[in-house]
Image (cartoon, rainbow, N blue to C red; front, top):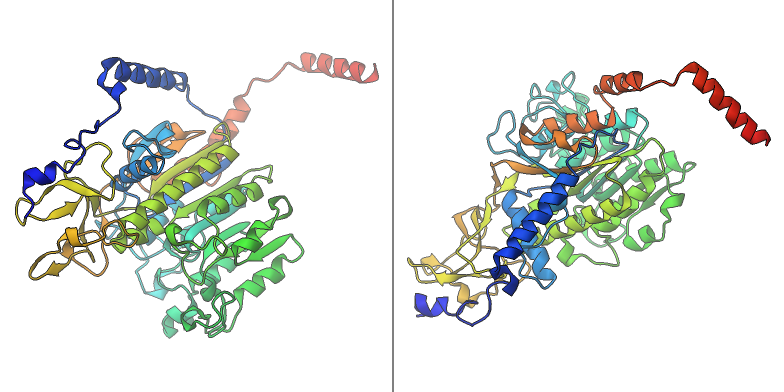
Length: 525
């Protein structure tokens, strides 16, 4: 048995390696760094009160604050650094707030009720999308009259181009709240609905994607099988029964969409090769369904078949920004959540790092002068890391000590519950016999569950661009789309824009006349 002392000596300290860069020993380094950041803060002190031409919401599904911190360290370690000092792109945003994530009927939220909050501006019950809390999950007859519209629709109604990009199914909980009104997030296609709900007039979420807001300019993610007639073979997996079409109504929603946009430079793609062959300057509408269900984790992505989140975001912005009135884009890093549910921290954190790359790309393609960008999460997870690890400890590595109860090693990353709970011979699994660095390793959990659960704490809201300063302090989650709409003068937030225009200084009529004469003289000369 390795003693605690011997185990501790296996860490960085006892190997004689420096725990941190040499310059960090000097107080002048920290003072100079703080002063540099202070001066930067002072230069950005003037509030950006421009009208936001463009709006981008990055939603890290399940990206609680511990996930943000761990992803930051991972990003740095992937770049050869110790990691803690690294900055994520969202870390560079000048404003940060906290959002309370509870649903109207749930202390610990689900992704459907939260999506209704940060997209439609009202808190809602768990499991429902695009309806108020007056709607009851699973009860079709509570839908009518309780529908609430999203900021994506507000933007479309204002003449902006709009888009949805996700690594999950495009009819999954988060994206569906942008266009659907459904009392059950699981009604993905009509085959998932009770017959009485269909007879009562309720529609599945996939159908609503194409009917409720028929001219969404950009839709990219997964979910092909929900759009195709029952038993229709999938183009990519023709021999796999689990990927066949699911629709009982016999409708082919993809073909219907293609027919509708055939004269408007619309393109449907289902693989990366065809996707990258498109020139966004020649595309006005795109429907990209790259998998029958969710897209694969980024660590397992087939680079010939599936685009990365960054590639999809790049293309989406290049299509949407052609509209002189601007755009609204919802981007979901949806599989962060799935990685955590499966207890696979490595998958979850790599998904978060990929979303950070997409945020960086979006920043290069837009300007904070006229683009409000918000990065947040719908909820957290019971994920954390600790164990008094040394500076630079691999984020997926072991804590520098054995348990003083069972004398076994443990990883820094742990879950409060989930599938990582394992007993071997009546005791906790001994990690000295396990490859805890593999992509699909399930981190140990305190309570056994088939799927790990969400966490209930507040999530961070990072923002930059016009009116970003309004996202500060601790706010209800449904406050977010109201700020974004206010910044862009859409939805119910227009009066301040009209007032501002009316109050703008007017040149005297005589001066305007002289200017006209001068311009005319210049043209004739």
